[in-house]
Amino acid sequence: MLRLPDAWTWDFWLADTGQEYHLFFLRASRALRAPDRRHYRASVGHAVSVDLFNWSLLPDALVPGDRPAFDDIATWTGSVVQGPDGLWYMYYTGISAEENGMVQRIGLSTSEDLIRWTRHSDFTILSADERWYEKLGTSSWTNEAWRDPWVFRDPGGNGWHMFVTARSCEGEVDSRGVVGHLVSMDLVHWEATSPLTSSNSGFGVLEVMQVEEVEGKSVLLFSCLHPEMSASRREAEVKGGIWVASGDDLLSGFDIASAYRLSDDRLYSGRLVRNRLGKWMMLAFHNQDENGEFVGEVSDPIPVGWDEEGRLVLFESAPTLQLVRDRQMSETSSLERSYLSSRVAEA
Image 1 (cartoon, rainbow, N blue to C red):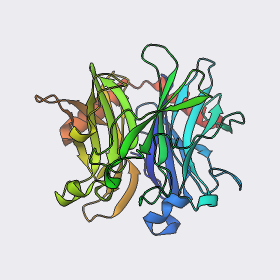
Image 2: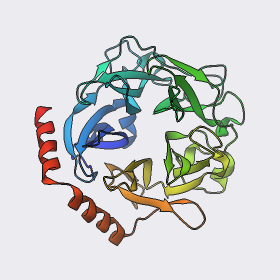
Image 3: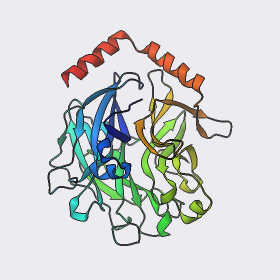
């Protein structure tokens, strides 16, 4: 678990080098006192682990840009991939003072070592394409959603894909959440395309998306809280949390209207990752305690698998979690721990 005494942590994303896991996470000072204020004070923290349980802090990866900049208020959720040139590419969300933080855009920073990051000077900042996606002021929705990029290599080897949290420019206002889609051949130049899913799905936004093939089945993970759902879902008292939609493959067939919850809103921003034993796990941040108070810390990994009905589920029992922890720790050699210590020292 990652809990910082002086800062809340929430949305996060991972990079796996094969030797270590790098965790990039949103952070904001607990001195703000009111957790809702954290969104406009967010920077990107950084920690590293060899086992997904024990994390060592590294210098922060990104902070808001100097004004005027697309990210001069805060830096929000992103993703990291390694390009064919060996560079690491971090795509992340920014909000600006120019629109009082109401318009979200996506920028790019690169790194040779995952520790020192430089904003990419030749990258064109990405924003919602009005041909398919809702822009600020075109509906009663309070902001322009274009955030939480998830980037992955094309399954057929034809370039790269980016999924973003976006809203369709048509449909019921409270149900326009879609999977925004962009494509690229070189990780620098991106072209927006039409959404991969339809509106009227029952969700106002699909946050913090991730697509993976888990034991031969394609799944789309996303998060949505109760206030951002459609009126019909809210009236039915459907709780928010982490959701799963099944797909035909990594790029098609996702039926968002039929998505089911993987976890309620005690956990949020779920990320699937393989541990060193090759088992699929989920990390999330602890969102609410039993009293409904914001927590703001990253969980230990939780095993996931398929139930008899073909649904992805969490195995959260205490004995199961302890067994996973014990096995993972036993597989982490002293050599790996020594390597990690040297990396932290270098930073």
